[in-house]
Amino acid sequence: MKHTDIKELFEKSEKYLNAVQTVCGWVRTWRDSKSIAFIELNDGTCLKNLQLVFDKEKLSADSFKDALVVGAALQVEGEFIPSERNGFEMLVKSVTVLGGCPQDYPLQKKHHTLEFLRTIPHLRPRTKYFEAVFAVRNKLSFAIHNYFQEHGYKYVHTPIITGSDCEGAGEMFRVTTMPWNLGSKTEQEYFAQDFFGRRANLTVSGQLEGEMAAMGLGKIYTFGPTFRAEHSNTTRHAAEFWQIEPEVSFADIHDIIEIAEEFIKYIIKYVLEHCSEELAYFDERVEKGLIDKLNHVISSDFAKVTYTEAVEILKKSGREFKFPVNWGCDLQTEHERYLTEEYFKKPVFVVDYPAEIKSFYMKQNPDGKTVAATDLLVPGIGEIIGCSEREADLNKLVNAMKIRNMPLEAYGEYLDLRKFGSVPHSGFGLGLERIMMYVTGVQNIRDTLLFPRTVGSL
Ligand code: 4AD
Ligand code: MG
Image (cartoon, rainbow, N blue to C red; front, side, top):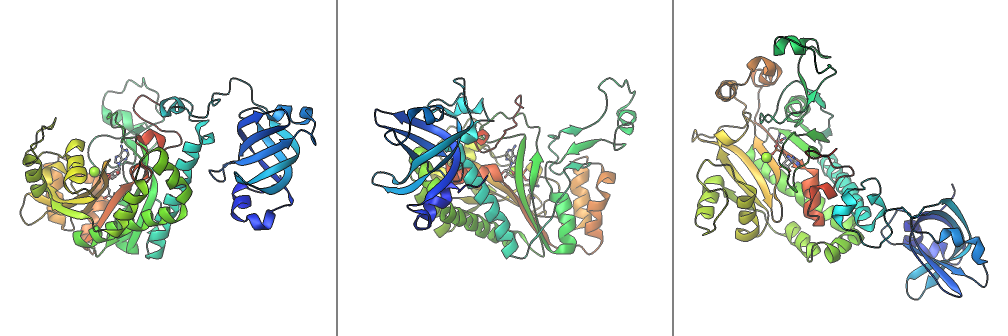
């Protein structure tokens, strides 16, 4: 259908002004009076609506009465003209209703609660809020690719279906084609009959395969869906989320922390530059001061603190936390948020966590207690990045796996990396939805995904 995007009309207005144009879109709102009628039309290409003006002296009311319907899809021909109040508007010559919209269309009001909109995920991209969310998600994804492409990383595609567990937290979804009532005597017998002849899962992380790629390609990154069967029903956990995982050969923990900070600043700066309209909307409607916050983040250094120091800070905080703090405990969201929001008041890397609370693959520090791992915590959310130098020593790695009772035979290829030309290497995982929440101020992870999958909700 030949037509011009509304974004194009607004952005290159000189080119289109005072000439007849065709636009398409959906009716957001309309108003009718004696001599004139108005429609706010949106086509999804930009947040701004195009105001359509129907002059009843020139157009018969019958010719556009079916267009004065919230949610209807229109194709409109008219003159694109300057307007005192709106900057620009369109003086309609003719209108075709592409798709009518009966009264039971749920988006009749101008504002709906986010809770209500979550019940109609198939329609919410037609609201300004979600138009802004998905515009930012788009640019953020593009910025992520840009950063890695400009810095010599190769984009690799790691498998979605895997036989191994990367994080070892038992949060994997099983993939199977088996009937539920096979009546097998043992687990082994059961899985032997399945599609792959063994147990298969949806990946929780592309890291292990990413490391294998990095051991030949040098610097790689993944960007794809990952899956966690966590029962944590929070505003920050989804069962299906997108993760970005760079893996860098010849890099130690200090190198990867530098990369992570530069990367986060790069993508925030990109969004500030390319989504100014959307960020202004979020600043006004969702988080006051959002743009100032983001500008501050890109222009100041992130804080850094060891886990051991962080525990001391938390103990001395005088706070009554729901989960008490002791050296060796996993930091809970309440602790993370105290550190980043109240103590440091900016993003902070917590480094050198106790080995017991972290994954098997992390480099063991000389103190024999901690690992070269860091989480990046940000105000309002908590952890957005999980990062570490990987254990490159075969014996130490095997030891860590034995302590965790891991089946070594399932990790033969991973161990080979430490046998054949092992090198120091490091990487991290950024949750796309978590950084989305940070740059938009959106409070619930369910509102950053097109179709959120969370426990009990598909
Ligand atoms: O800290 P995690 O578990 O680290 C890994 O998976 C490593 N293999 C990454 C690596 O070193 N390559 O997860 C990484 C990030 C978290 O910091 C968080 O941002 C996000 O993934 N994340 C989730 N996001 C949404 N919902 C969930 N259930 C998430 N679990 C983790
Ligand atoms: Mg983590």
